[in-house]
Length: 393
Length: 175
Image 1 (cartoon, rainbow over the protein chains, first blue to last red):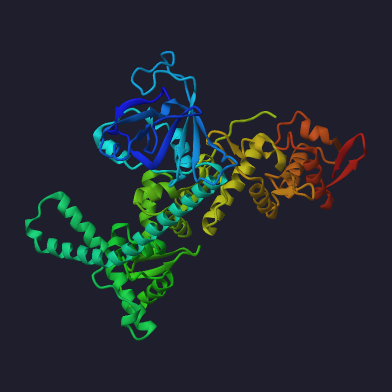
Image 2 (cartoon, rainbow over the protein chains, first blue to last red):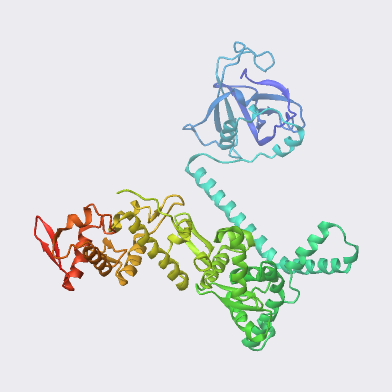
């Protein structure tokens, strides 16, 4: 009982009341004391006892620091147990200064434990909460800045003991995962609905920029404009707007040709069909095309007199290339490069021309078929040389 | 074997020379270049026998300066081409050992016959050793005995000589 001190019931910074019980009597060891019928409040730092109303109004009351509690146990009900009274034994550490306490209700005590007697039993599961609080040792955490203490005001009560505790924490984790998955997919569906608006917005910006074309000098703006223009096909050809597949493919072929022509010129007159597929679908954004549709459309290009045509290398690689581009001109231009560089590998050619390695290799192979270059297949890889066998004697 | 520095053709330092070319026209030029190079090399170095398994050791098929080797499969096919013109022949069935004839066997025969008649050696017996290891500086000096025997056999068929092939002394009588 000498571990109690008189103090006022105002809470310390960072401290909060976890629960209160009424009609509690304090025992000093086994002896009843006059402190009966009072309110007991458990905070994160202390155990407070006061006459009814005293704690709430912040008057002087008895206080026991939780740091002094060694352990506690419930007193098992005695044989006379008709009463609902329950008792908790609280074992205490010794005080530092020889177990003498000038500020408390009792100067010294022969007992190293007190009893809390609940005349009407517990209304709350004080045993669990007390256990939890003692384990968390919140009184040890240093006082933090006021902004953070606000967040600490509502400490979470976690039950962590026993199998039930483990099960609960597992359940909580599962729940959290479920929620995050739900949130993630919610975002996705939102994105789907937002995409259309985004495309419309992009178009709006691009037309606005088009209108103001005269005013723009800034490099960045021009770049942005070019991004937008390269991103969007204003009115994608879709299957729904055509009656027959054939007409659809024809329309598609025209559009692909219009759109890709510029890009294909940029990369030297030839582009692998896979690259065409990617560029087209990126430009369309929505209403994506299947590889099959693109292939079918490209097959029609030859008959439609479009500036592009589908070409298949003997290895099976298919490319879209400019109609003006014939194998022979490709071979000749490759030969020029070869003579300049003396020898070249597919990788080097692809870097030189900014085309894919597959395409570069196809170019070299077709140049070889024209007898304009010859190969050197060594451990260092496949390289191509100008065909000196035929040109030099 | 004494190595005589031969003048390598330009192809020898051209890396694609060591890869069989797929383009037909290019390949025929390449193979032709190889054929003349092989015969030229063998002639200058008096190499009569080429073992494919040891072809790496011949500078002919291994240009260490540009780090290129001719694959053994390609060597066999080129030697096969040479065989068609009578300039090479496989000694074993697995085509690992080849005899190279920079003169065909018939040509060798007439070269030897010319030598014999111009030196008045007809109706006399000579050992093969005299022919290919003797003091003469004729072209067939240093010719491999197996090749020499084959060349003389072509003469024998024309009744211009007769081979005497006993275990110890191998000789030939010219008519």
